[in-house]
Image (cartoon, rainbow, N blue to C red; front, side):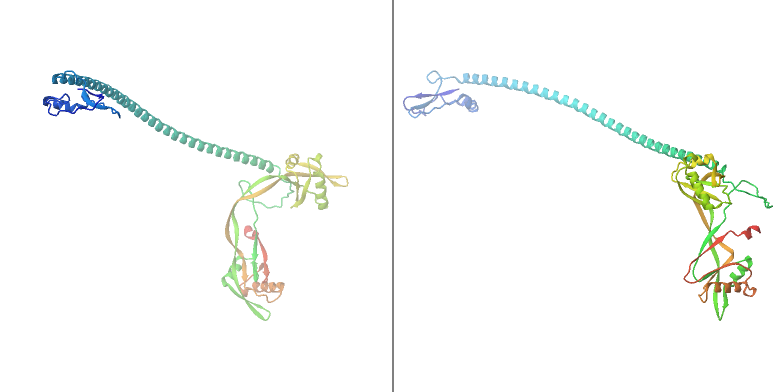
Length: 419
């Protein structure tokens, strides 16, 4: 039951504790209820003033007191209100729960959707990686094909270049320098296609204190090599020599690539009865004139029986070779007809060597310098011509003294070919 504080002008009257039923005390049968809800019905509102007194009274202090039943009824009403409030709170909680469940359901649906989207994105990424791998493979294949195309183009260019060179060679072969030939009675049984022949010319370096001696017969050379050591009597002394075979490096296979020189021409049919130096000057004057399809001449030189003319420019040779025949003034109002053909530059592209032993030549080593070069060479030749010394007819001999270096030239053995 609510209570209030009433101000009074006087002092607070004392409370009689012997009173049976004071208005502020509950009976035993309602004491528990009052204790549970004392804060609800016993609302004290004390107010203190410096010059006033106060006392604790109830609202019905001056009226009749409330019965316990009435208090219980009021408490029941309050509990109803509380219950209604609890029901309302429960309803709101249920509503909130339903909202939370709805949100959770929406969240779950969104999670499923996002998971599906993530799986689709992963699948798309996997497909994209596969496509990238395919693209890389296609690019690699394209690069390989491009390389093959470039190689094919390079091969085609080389074939075109070879074709052009072969055409130039064909033109050269049909425009070889003129040479005067005569039949001397020699015949040959060789048949087959035309081929080039080369003559061997090998330069052999000789050390000091050595000599090379070539015999007319191979058997004599082999006999001298068989004895190995030889004592040669020279004046008042004897010298001891050692005979060794001559090992020479010779080409066993050679390939030569030729091409037409754009700055040089080869002139054949050169006259024999004129001064050659003067004729070279006449050729230089003739081929330096523009009206003769020439230009500035860099050099003129002899090559066997022919003349090589070199120009400053590399565009003149072709026009001159197309014309072929030229009338050159040789002086005295006379003209001589010469033929102009292309000049071929050659380059060795493949060379294979082999070791060969000269069958008729012997190397003598350990020769001291005991006398003059020519005199010692004569003594050696006389010694090895004697049959008693195991020698025979000497075809050639060369001696290189100590402290000197001599280059011996080996050429093709015509004797073995005729045999």
